[in-house]
Image (cartoon, rainbow, N blue to C red; front, side, top):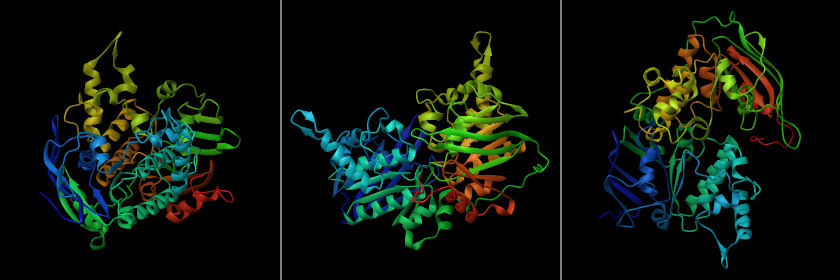
Length: 514
C-alpha cells in the first residue's frame, strides 16, 4: 500500500530482465503530481524501459506500481490508457501510409452511426494542430511529412485523450527546431495548469533546466539520485549521469589541412521543389582529405537533401560533383557505396536499421559483397569484421546474434555508424549522428569521428547542435532555405556567426522551420 497525495504514480523496486541483460535493477520512482518529472541517464540506463512499464508496453519482471493508493498492473497499453497514461515515443510510432487525422485518432475513433466520423476527425485534428502551431492539412499522408512534423503529429495524438493524467515524453524534441521546442514547452505548461503530470526524457540538458521541476537519474539500470531542478546545476546532473563532468572539447589535429587535397567538390547543385523553388539552391562546397566538414542549419534548410543527392536518392538534381579529381556521374545508391561514399542517416529506425535482423547482419548488410566466397557467404570473415567494428566503436553487445532492438538507442546508433564504416568509405556522410544519444555516448562518437579523420577518412557531419558542430568540425558550411549562406573556419566559428548565417537565407515572413 502506497498513498501520497503529491505522487500520481509510484514504482516500487522494479526489475526488468531481458535475455542476457538486467535492464532495470530494483528501481523506485515517484511521479510527482502536476510537475515535469525529468528522467535522465546515459543510453542503456533504463529510462525508456521504465517508461514502457508505466505505459503498459512491457511488464516488469518484479516490483509493483501504485496509483491512487491502489496497486496497478498494466497488461497492455489499453489498460494504461484507461488510467489516463499516454506516451510519446522516442522512435515515432506513426503509420506512414495513413493520413494525419487517421494517425491522430487511431484508437480514439469517433463514430456516426456505424461509420467513422471522419469529418469530426478532420476538425479535431485541425484544432489540435493549430494549438501546436503546425497547421498541417489533415488529409496529408504522414509518410510525406518531414521528421519534425511527424513528431508534432505524435504529440497531437496524445493531446486528444480527454482523461489524460500522465503524459510520458521520450525525447520529444530530438527532431524539432528551436521554434518548435518553444511551442512544445508552452503546451507542456498548459498541461501542468490542467493538473496533468509529465515525465520528460531528454539528452538536452539545457532543456531540462528550463522546463523541468524534478530530476531523477538512472545509471546502468539503477536509481542514482533525484532532486528539484531549482536546487541543482548542470554539473550535478552530468556528474551523476556519467560519474564525471564531461565537456565537449576540440580535438588537436595532427593533419595539416591547409596542405590537404580536395577529395570532393560540389558545384552549383540544385534540387527542385514540387510547386516551384528549390530544396537546394545553387550550392557550392568542397571537402578535403582527412577533414571533418560540418554542415549547420535549421530544419528544412536542405542539409539532409544534400546527402541524399550525393548518395543517388535524387536523380533529378542538377549541378556537378567532382570526386577524387574527376567528374562523378551519380547513379544508384549501391554504386555510390562502391565508389567510396557511405551515409549514416538521421532516422536510424526507418533508414539505418532492419528491425527483423540481428545485430551482426545489421552491421554487415551494406558490405555483404566483400564477404562472398564464390556463390556463398563467408560467415567467418563476416563475423570477424563485425567483431572488429564492435570492439573499435565500443558497442555494448552481450551477443551479436541478439535482435537489433535489444540494444539501447545509443548502441543502435553505433551499429549504424559501424555499418557505414564497414563499407570502407573514402567519404563518410553523417546526418545528426548524436541524435538521441547521451553525453557519454556523444563523446565516444566524437572520438570515433576524430580517430577516423586522423586515419585519412573525409567526413561530413550534419548537426543542429551548436556546441557539437563547433567541437568536431574543422570547417563549417551553413545552409539556410536551400542556400549556402556561410563558410566558417578557425576563429570565425562562433555561436553568433552560425546562428546569424542560419537565418540569412530566410525571406521576409519566413519561419525558423522554413
